[in-house]
Amino acid sequence: MTVTEQFSTEPPASDIPLEVLRIAGWTDGTRAERDALLGGYLRTLEQLTDSRLLGESLAVGLLHDTPEIRRQALAATVRLCPELAAEAVGWALADPDETVRGPALASLAENPALRSAGGSSALHALLAVLGRSPHQIAAGAGNYVTVADAHALASARTLLADPSLAATVLDELPVPLSADRLPSRLSLDGMRHVPAGRLRRGPRPGQERSWGDPAEAAVDEVMVEGFYLDTCPVTNDEYDAFVADVGEHGHLWCHPDEPRNTDHTRSTVDDPRCAGDQPVAGVSWYDAVAYADWCGKRLPTEDEWERAARGDDHRRYPWGAEFRPDRVRGLHSVLPSDGGPDLDRQAWLRRLADLRVAEQPALTGPVNALPGDESPFGVRDMCGNVWEWTSTRFLDGLPFQPRFGTMDPGDLSGEWSAEVSVRGGAWTSPPALLTAVSRAGKTLVTRSPEIGFRCAVGESGALG
Image (cartoon, rainbow, N blue to C red; front, side, top):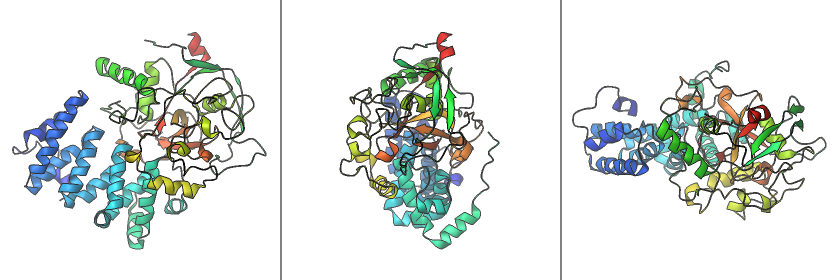
């Protein structure tokens, strides 16, 4: 019996335990309240002996709106209900929250029986998440910029190595989604003015190229109007203040396309390694847009971000022409022996595939902490620590105007028109990606411990 069959819209059976009904009805509250309900729910699961009742109770958690509850329910399913584990892992692999996808990937990698039983559903989910053809997956040539991407890539390669499984899944893949579906708190304190000027996109002509550099831009030079940009990325403390305000006053600042029942709480909120003065991470594009609107600001365009980082001389790094490991937090900071300047793409992907985020003593570092990490306009921390959301669509560079509100977030995986440009590299990035020219695309509902943001204001908006 599948998870879908176990869970229906019909009222639950009268013998469903009270602790399961309580977790099903919980939608909002304090972390302590959630943890208490979650503890009772998990203890109840351990005591259930009726297989149908156990399946129904597990499905309540697997389909919950709260990522932490989904994550714990997944672990319980793998442990307690092997006949449902394969489908549950397949669902979790397409989860928009990387803190849910990570444990699912680990379960798949560590459990050969699970791979065998759920290979078809898992490969479906992995191909959707990666959004790439088998040939690109084999070459590792896509926009794989997070640890979860690397783990998913390794699992997809393993499953694609089974010819019969790969043939079956590829024959059944659905047709891709069409691309045509396409009171002010404003203060300029903590922002830097970036004057109007030319931007020569990407590497300078004649400059030696790296594997992390983007393809040639369709329009290689543009004029960028003057604007203001946050000096540093938004921090956990600043973002948590916004979440608290949403809890008190409601969703007054959210993007109109935002998925229903969105909880803006960052997915890293329970991670003690993510201190208040570190850049916020584990937030979707919708979360970032809502925070920016709450501040009376907006997300920067990709061209604004690059101009702020490179200045009038179109430098490769915010601080100059040469890579300076002491001025940026990247893979060389987290794994000192594994992040050398000559690390190629395949070696980096192998290191990411072996990296266990939960076992790392530290992830991001404090903002504004590295001497010399400053652009010509005085903007800091533009490379490393976290990738930063922009307001630009990745594939074609047009303004991003999402129209996905009626869709399930999990259905957006692999949809090119739902990918947004992120810039700057992160704590898991090698030197080739820790530049002012590297770029990647991530689905707008992604919540990763490697992606944060900063805000911008146009000159006209600042005067208004």
